[in-house]
Length: 255
Length: 207
Image (cartoon, rainbow over all chains, first blue to last red):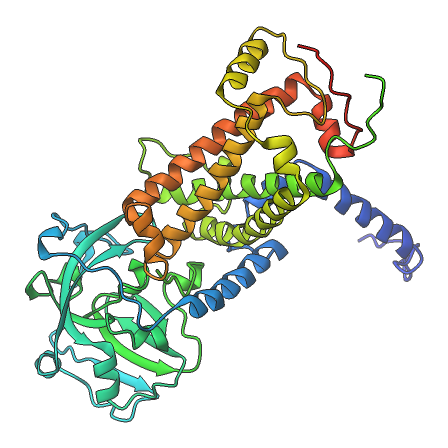
């Protein structure tokens, strides 16, 4: 059994003694890194998923753009509508999963309500169909850039929110779906006359792939805001985010 | 030839606005390519290393961040260009005949390049790229806000067509950049003049 002859109790040099040198070296290294071509590669790596200052700045600018878009939004300005003959055929399926993974409506499905709502009793499809209905033929614009024209009808969301006694001064309306999806919108957009809880697509009750039994249809926002297969609606003042929004899609995404 | 011109080839304001604009256009183009890749309307996509933002959301975040820089720089430049006489003095088109004469002279290597003076082809290209950048901003706004700025989308033929025009404007700007950079390589002192502010050269008949 060998033991070191002496145990070093004190480091030969303490960090305090060489602090100025340490700072100079790290500064020089940072400068070199900043000036190197690698800095462009670092920038192109900023994709909202890192903890870099650049990504933080991008997130801050997304929030700024949310405020600009809220200011640009008008309750009375309508999305263009088209004749029924303009509906895109075949209509493209789109979700965060493949079409074969579409889920059927659970047998015990009811529309759940929570948050700043006076009457939180759950809703059935029959009750929703008994409310006033609106139809629209509008352009669905995907955040990816493609677009298609569809025909939807259902209950205007403002009618529904008033009916259940929602706090219309709250900031957000959020949607949870039984396919694991979620999204949220601002209250002024929720109260827009073309924002509907759609029950039908091209004259027929929604099929599972088009969002059965009830989906949001909001032509004043990009397509990913029109959540399908809704199971719960909540009215809240706490930012709810959403499936894509949490990964970096611009939250307001107004058209 | 006898009198030395004291004015710089490019005033400091122009040089600052040129470089802010150049970097913004680069960022807009690279982030635009990331967005394009999500749903390409031409039969190709851009390699990931050529894009900014890495994926659709990152590309959009860059695009709608840098657009403010480009917009501010562009408004400042247009105001300066009109108010200072820069557009009238340096960029006013000289007519098709002058463009043909200068283009033939350039292609046969007989066109002199005087710092601080713009020949007919340069004027055409610079006015062209300014118009293209303005169109890309306008078409970009029209596809960012096809409802709130629906009148603008209508001017450009509706959302899908406006999206195509936005892509076409990008291609036009990219072609300009290729020609512009090629000429900078051929006449490197123009790069020094845009960076360091050399004095304008006397206008002489070098052609």
